[in-house]
Length: 158
Image 1 (spheres, rainbow, N blue to C red):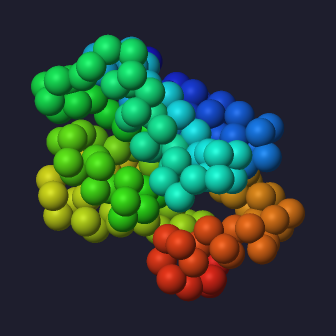
Image 2: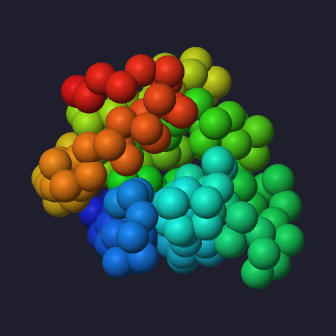
């Protein structure tokens, strides 16, 4: 099993979010080659300010069995979009050492913050992730721009 395989699982979570009327962001947390948590963006579906895909995956991993610090230190987070500052803070807090990103052209998150805190970043430049976001933006520009305002205070798209 490799990065492409686990990214496909994160993409499945992003598609689940779309099917629920949400933003196409998905994530999986993997430890020792096994998915221990998966999640997707639920901001719209749950009328939430914090249910990002990465946080949902971390929360779902911990809800099954309380994870230890060592569990997080031996894991990789796969996410379809570059993590925002909030999600990056959680990655740093839980000492997740590696993040694999499907796409970081639509929205570049806090990758420098992660790198500056010793997190390995791998960007797959995955075309399916790009298409999911581009299609979502075309079909939902107002919603996407509103979510961008929450993330970085602007409404400009890349």
